[in-house]
Image 1 (cartoon, helix red, strand yellow):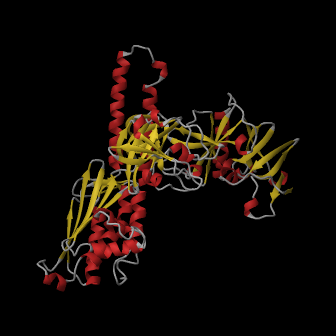
Image 2 (cartoon, one colour):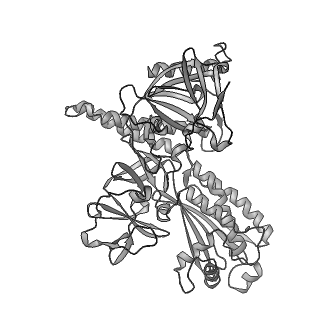
Image 3 (spheres, helix red, strand yellow):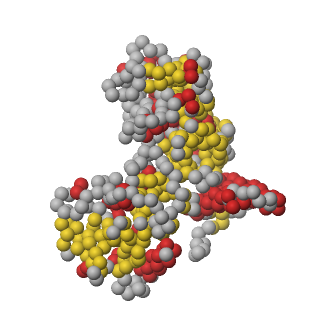
Amino acid sequence: MDQQTTQQIADAKRAAEEGGVAGADSIDSMYLTFAVGSEDYGLTIGMVTEIVGMQRIMVVPDVPDYIKGVINLRGKVIPLMDVRLRFNMAERPYDDRTVVIVLEVNDAPMGLIVDRVREVIDIPDANIDSAHNFGGADSRSVVSGLGRIEERVVILLDVPVLVSDMDVIAPQALRN
Amino acid sequence: MSANPEATTEKSSGGALLRVSSDKIGRLMDLVGELSLSVSETVNSPDLEGLDLVGFDAAAHRLSMIVREVQDAATELRLVPVGEVFRRLKRMVRELERETKKNIDLIIEGDDTAIDKLVADKLYDPLLHVVRNSADHGLETPEERAQTSKKKAGTIKLTAAQVGSEVRIQVIDDGRGLNREKILKIARKRGFFGETEEPEPERLWKCIFEPGFSTAEKVSTLSGRGVGMDVLNTTMSELRGRIAVDSEEGSGTTVSLHIPVSLAFLDSILLRLGKHLFTVPVEDISEIVKPGPSDIVGVSARRGKEKGSDMLRLRGAHIPILRLEKFYNSKVTDMTPLSEMVCIVFNTSRGTIAVPVDEVMDRQQVVMKPLVGSLAKVRASWGCALLPSGEVAIVLDCERLASGDEK
């Protein structure tokens, strides 16, 4: 599953680079979806570098509680964020479906610990209700919008906010 | 893989040289680091435990030896002679001669000393400021020199030499030297020392590198407005280097910069504190002490909400104990009693401190990586180190640890 999804992401990115061979599937509208608790989340695949199984975590000092430590991924040191803790959800022991989504945001790596990954899907802008903020940059929500795919709703995340140390706040309004 | 025909050959007296982008070398260094980690993972695999594998052990040993040689060879790729930086300075000195109307003999020694390209690239600016300072403030005018027994042209000597795992670069001038009275007066005015304090010369001279310190009565365009010395301090701390100044009034000043040869590999001691792994450059450690019960002195006197601190008694001196648990987490409550710990003693510019840890592990050559993103906020740290075991340790910067390094 992990490798398959990683491959899928790599393919989509390559297709986008080669000038949209995949047709309407522009990389911007491709989302990697994953589950945390009973909720479905999604993030744009542009920042995803790979998906790996849970690794041995080494603790580091002086980081927020939701940063569980770092892993050594083939010589790269990657901090791991437990998305449950970041969202103030109850902690849950890791199992064999727990995965790490490795991101590259502003040249810095970050691994997200999530309950399980689902799939890469295309959500056109028309199916997204975007978050709107009234209070300026300080009140920027970690939720960038809600995506609708048939009966499902996927909570789309603002990755730079997620990996920053800004407080997690709910969006104030959503509209298409 | 696409092969970029980017490497071009260049004729030189010492044989054909190859131009390779530093990105490619960086990639190679990363790969070599990964290679050495995965070899050590394979060789030390728990699956092999209890097996009697004579042939394998011999092969594994050979493999480890080769990996180490590859590692050394890769490190060497990025070493360049420091002479390149010196040559740029030489041109600058000619300029300085014109501007100051002083005659300067520049002597260069040890310009073939090898240094990491990344370090060399950062050396020019700080060295330029030291050289400028010598030319501008250190050396006397030809008329002044004529009144002493000195020859008319002043001398600035640039030397480089490898000392252990460090490169020592010195800027030596035969000028008027530093004036203790004048510098002490300003240092006191700036609050570096108390009104009656008589600092050791070594500590006093270092003041001239503090930001905002300038003894020149006239601000000249050459030496800037005390901004230059700040560049020196910032760069030296980036390069994990040290500055030392020695001076004798009337006969000259020597400024020594001690810089690690390579920023990529670090000769360090591995420490364990609870579940945390730390590592410190070997040269930072002054000693390692296992304190007995009578060596710990509790001091309850304190300011405001501060916790009382403990002192380590070491040969008659009392050294403040700095606990990393408390430094990184002020709310920590249960800490291992000091009697069960080992104290690492650091000599820092802010004085001596003792840092207790649970265990002193190996001395190792580690690969150092910068802390980026959400890890950039880890205080008192140079970066993180990848250990041959695949584990990650935080490299402690004892200078910033001693200074408190507030969030």
